[in-house]
Image (tube, rainbow, N blue to C red; front, side, top):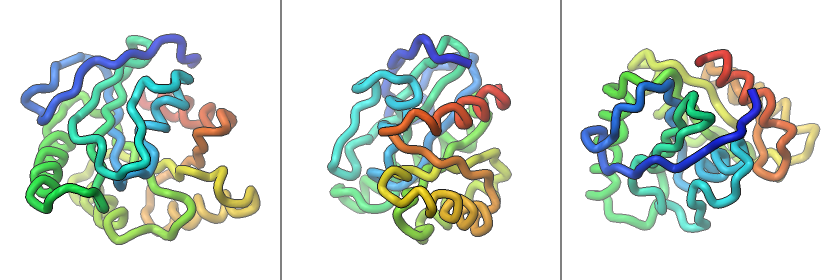
Length: 189
């Protein structure tokens, strides 16, 4: 599938405000600043479609993007470090869990994990939560351009073994990795 059209639809604070779009949806989950917005921009080849920031915690709402009028990317608030109060983080977590469990359009979660680090505790907890709730998921190992090429397969294998989900490498600076990810998405829709 070639991506020829992508557009921002809406931002919503919770599932109640999200429109029913009747398209397969892929919910992007991961730590704050792992590269969820950069992932969207790179895969659709439109810089700035999803807002990016170097400051963790900038995504505070559920952001929906239509891709080729065939499927939706849902860019969700990150977990982990963010310069916001604990009360607000708890509110995000509750909203995130409700969205992931009750949003019937979701065909798969995409868990993004930074390839430069070992699996973090909150990544591990998210993977366990996904399994506990029997939700479909695959993993994107982000920022592989920042590790050596010889490490990429080892990191992906390590993530796959530890978390028991299929893993795909990704770099916002190299569209080479996008083909396999798009093929996986196409397979699921």
